[in-house]
Image (cartoon, rainbow, N blue to C red; front, side, top):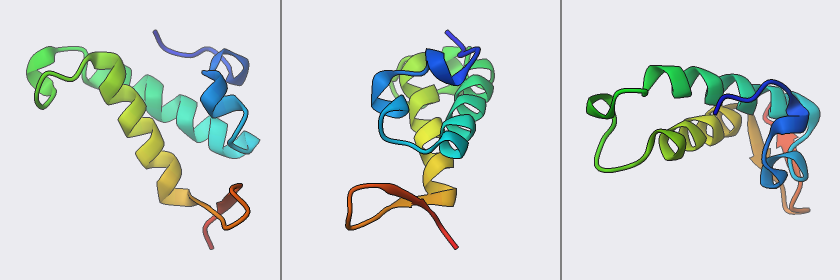
Length: 76
């Protein structure tokens, strides 16, 4: 289930990440959704959706970090 827009993202993403990080999440999720459509391409028994969410969060964490204030900030 690729996401068409930021508004379609899960609440756990929309309500915690800044707009740019949401864009990163959406693009990474959609890319992983396509890349890991075959179960042979995934490790273990993780579903296609689980893998796509993990990839998306990893992409966000590459450019953002969670601060002491519990908000996500762009990494310098």
